[in-house]
Image 1: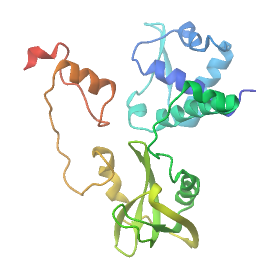
Image 2: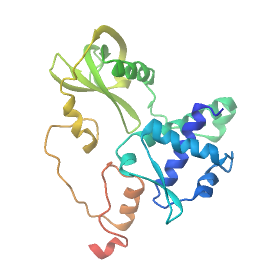
Image 3: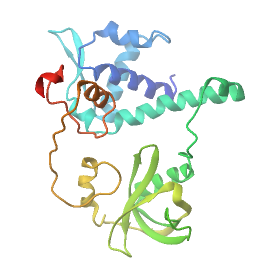
Image 4: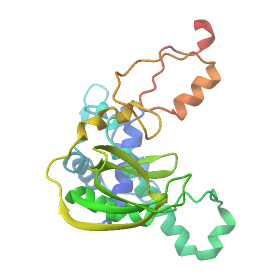
Amino acid sequence: MSSRLTILRSYYKILSRLKQGTHPDKSGLLDLFEDDPISERTLERYLTGLKTEFGLIVRYNRSSKGYYLENPDDLKDSEVLKILEYSVQNEFILDLLADGKKSLEFIQFEDQGLLSGVEHLRPLFKAIKAQRVIEIYYTKFRDDKIKSHQLYPYLLKEYQGRWYVIGHEPQYGELRTFSIDRIRKLTNTVEFFRTKTNFEDLQNLKNIIGVNWEKKKIQTVVLRMTEQQAKYQEALPWHPYLRLLCEYPMKNHF
């Protein structure tokens, strides 16, 4: 039986291929697993799993004789691909651990302390699911003084390699954002919250760049850039809703 990590990695391969927009046939999907071949039955099981676990429906088009996502926007507006991407990264880390110190000869990480505070991710995630009130002891970026905060945790958000927890703080009556690398201690209280006060304020969060936002009307911004800049933004967009409005070569549109 396939391990959970292997299954998630397989989901990622399939979705990454379908995300390209073309309709691969069954052999095209099976070719994704040439390093570790799978059967047609296993492929069908993976396609079924995408539907039952993540609500992503893969259909077969008889005209093009290929597979496609029934609603590609379901993938754009969800965090599924990111979660599956983490599963691939985790498998890579396991390979590094298996090789021990020798693996460090072939890889170099950023030395910026981006993993600081990751020990809080799991307890924060559990508290969010359980709607448990937590108490965090936190230091601001410009102040080393430790201050206690009672928080109704709502959401974990990653931005530029760092993780943040966003929630309602009763003392201030508003949503607050805390960087987990600044959390010095985290404890669960015996209290739970039934209603998510100010939770609707998070609706604009996906429309902003960064982790801080205001309750203002969303506006559309049109940027003009060179073809080279456009290609870079298309490959690595700095905003989730960045869309190309014209085709290459863009110099014809200036």
